[in-house]
Image (cartoon, rainbow, N blue to C red; front, side, top):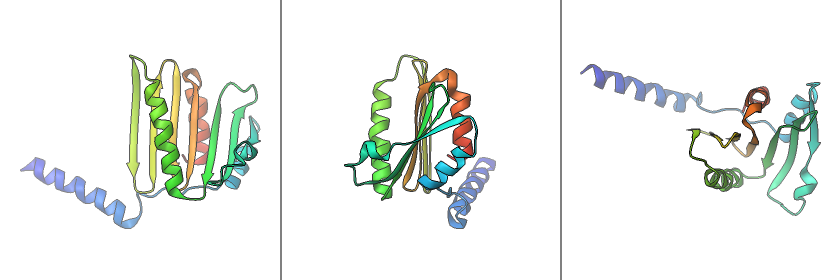
Length: 156
């Protein structure tokens, strides 16, 4: 009986998050990403949009890296959410093919937000999507803390 009441309580809490919109995360634009990174003195920022000039699905692409280019966080702003979802799924398939024998992964899918992380073969990989935007990471796992600092800064 106690388990049933607990389960009902959990379901009600989850439903209330969706109804009130508390499950939603606020996305940022490429311009907001740029501004947040530029305010920090320890990162280099690259506008990489012209590398994808033939891709009409993208609004903007920025890369934030440490000053020695040891790690980076790529930020993609798509015109449509469906394109961002497709980008995440395609890259997730690539990440999963690179899995080693020992790995740690996590996944969250809530409302307008999804996040997939994978640690394998001394690498740390992240795909974090909010609405039509994606933060992409493929770095050495010794830079996990530094990468997470950037993701926290931008809210992803």
